Image 1 (cartoon, rainbow, N blue to C red):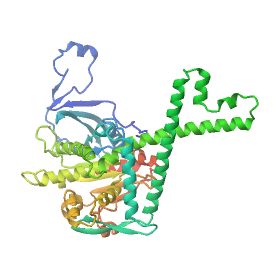
Image 2 (image 1 turned 180 degrees about the vertical axis):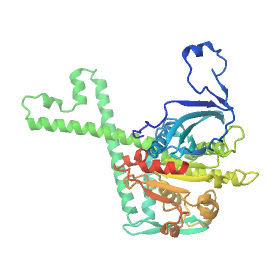
Image 3 (image 1 turned 135 degrees about the horizontal axis):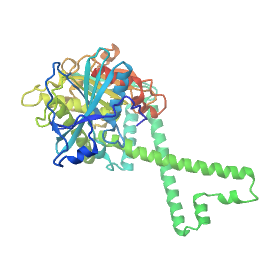
Image 4 (image 1 turned 90 degrees about the vertical axis):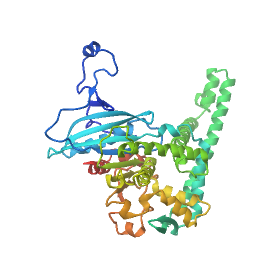
Length: 479
């Protein structure tokens, strides 16, 4: 995560546990000691005295974090900081925050509660939930499984595209198979990526082999200082030699620096492949891999379970009857956000009382940023052994109502996607709409916004968090 400005985030919060609330103000240590230690200290019912003015109806915001190692509640903190920073810049005044904790599916579900008043003194309340799935993939995907997945994906894309010539592939969208464009640069780009990946794999193998040899030498050196230095700093005898020229010594120094920079780069790339690309491999690999399917199902269950609480499918957890719900996702979390919204719509439509939770009408915004959704659509499409089978395409699309019918499932300005040209993972989403809808910039189509916050290659993937565009998009969605 990039460094975020948390100055606008309140330093104190009210805490609620289910239907029980903690004291509004902190108590002194002496006051706490005087109380009897029975259950929660100082907890009281959350019922408040009647007010002449009804409190504002809260807005629910479900956020799905991206790939890699994430800390629980970190994404909630990032979203809250972006919202409150932008609200403050608009002349709003934060009036405190809160935390609600409840029990859901034998685990605790926490939400952050943000409150502020706008310049017209109108109160606003936002409840932020998180679909936290990071532990599910931790240690589940190996380095070689990730490499295999990446090479297979690149190969499928290379086979399906043309050198410097646009072509098309078919995807079932809105009632029919649609011809979608594969850009002219796709094959060359994928080939370069495959070559770079192959070079990295070879470099990792050679460096690890060399380090293993050095480790063996250390074991046989009995850790004598001179021998250890010779192993760890090859060529150090040249530096200590009185007959070596300055040029020779400088060359040895440069080689040593280059070697350890290479070692650092190799370990970073290997870590990235396992922790980040490994998550992608686990989530979007073909369903024929039962191990990855199990991981994917568990991740999707996390998103769906939180969404069920928000929309009121769970009659146990006490939540407000949210009239507006926003779903947001970063990176691979955007794929989960998309899958979660589709799943909760399907659940609403297939329940005993279809449409009783009014999911489509209550979902007012889907925000994706740093999203690989276009790439996953293309990869999924070309992983089938029968890419021209229309029935398979229809079946695959049946669980994705967002690409089935505009009037039924796409309200105007529902979906906004933030992307950056310097973010190799993200892209403008073109494969989730009819081409004519994108070309005419219909309000029913995905709104693709180029984020100027992405200024550094690769690092642009996380620079959305500190940019103004994401903060503005979130604020406009919840205000």
